[in-house]
Every structure is written in C-alpha cells, then in structure tokens.
Image (cartoon, rainbow, N blue to C red; front, side, top):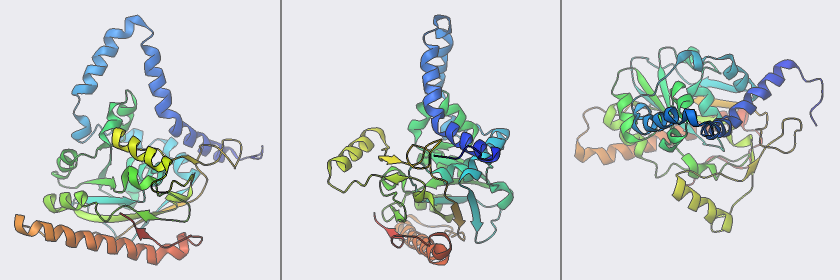
Length: 328
C-alpha cells in the first residue's frame, strides 16, 4: 500500500494521471446522461450532425494553446517523468514527420510530448508547431473529440497528414507501430512493427518533409501485459477486435491509486524520449524513382533508430530483456 505521508506534489501527479485515464469514460457517460433530459434533445441532435459534418480532424484540428499549457499536463508528465533528449536542433522553417516508437499500451509519451507542453517541447524545439495524429475513429466520440482537437490532435489519414504538411513550418507526429505494436508491449522489450510501414515515408517524399526518428525508452515498461502467443485464442480475439474497430486493447495491468501492485494506473517509471537527427528526402523525385527512394529512406530511418538504441540503451534500458528488434 502507498504510505499516507505522500507529498502533495506526488498526489497531484497521480490525480492528473488518473483524470487523463478516466476522461473518455466520464465524458461519454455524461453525453449519454444528457439524453435523459428531453429539452436538450434539439441541441444534442444538432451536435451529432455537426460531428458528422465537421472536417476539423482532417484540416489541422482546432488547437487551443492555453489548453496545451495547462499546469495539469506538467503534473501528468512529472508522474513518470517524461524527458526529452535531442540529438540536434531543428530548423523551424522546415516541415517534419516525427515517427514515435514504440506505441506501448497507451502511447503516454507521445501524448505528453507532442500534444501538450508537459515536458517543454516548444522550449526544446522553438518555432515548430506539431500535430499528433491518431485514428479517425477517436473523433466520433462526443466531447472527447473536442478535447483532442483542442490539443492539436488530428486524424492520421493520408489526406489529413498532407493537408498539415502543405504549410511551411508545420509538422506531424505519428505513432508508426499503432495498435499492432501494442500487442508487443512487454517490459524490457522493444519490438517495433516497422518493416512494412512505408506510408509515412511516402508522405515525406511527396511533401518534402524530413523524417525524425523518435525512440521512447520506458514506454513499454509502465504496464505489465498478459502475453498472447501468436495463434492462441487471446491473440485471435485481439486481432479480430482490431480488424473490426481499427484498434485493439491488450490485457494489461499496472498499479493502483493507493497500492503499488495491481490496478490500471501506469507504473512510475521514467520515459526518456530521444529525438534522432532529421533525414531529408531528395527533391524532385519522379514517379519511376519513387519506390526506390522510399525504400532507401525507410532503410536509413530504421538504421537511425538502431543507432539511437545502441547509443542510449545502457543508460536508459539497463534492465532490458533483449535488444531492439524489428518484428513486422
């Protein structure tokens, strides 16, 4: 059990992390409750129609800077804590695609780093405005979608990515491994689903955006997951859910609010988010050259991730179970 004399600062960090975790359930429950009040029906119907028609998720979001800078996010980042380590400065006049790895269970490091100012992204990379990209299905959830949009989070569709990158000085962050990679999120292991993920590299070639590999040490360590062997009933169920909904949910546990052994709160373990050097795509690539250029950039990108791992693994992953691996 957690001791009673925990400092107030740590209690606030735990509270922020708890609120972040339960927010989707709370707001959806509140939305359902509102339907029990008949005089609100015209407003709710209009809101649902607006959700269907609203193109903000694919047109840059509705970023609200003061929401991203709330003290709440500072407490959330300090819970682990989440730290930024950068290999080089970035030119704010250029466009970038940040590839975040690994996904982990809930991609906490990506949200804190790219959708908030909890760990000071704008101080580390001044002048770079970045949108974190997520599944379009997240924008079908009433109220929750508006909260995501205020953080600058947008749909990860190809149309959405290219819309943002057509403007000078704009960047996007993509958790490349996605739901598939979450099934490989085990403590001490970083297995990246990347070998066949070429879409983000193609967008870089088409838009001229530089690729920046980002490797988060610790993302897979903050939860314990029940292992599902390929071909097992659990693995088959998870893959069917993924095929139907676009995402899947691993069977995981962390710690509790008042205990350190069991619960759905993440463990307090540091996340060290390392930004590699940018990889610039060639200009004026012809259609005939495109496939070869994409493959070459993808290889450079994977080699860069490997180099980051080799450089920092003894500092940030001393208790690793195995070396970095590219599994799919």
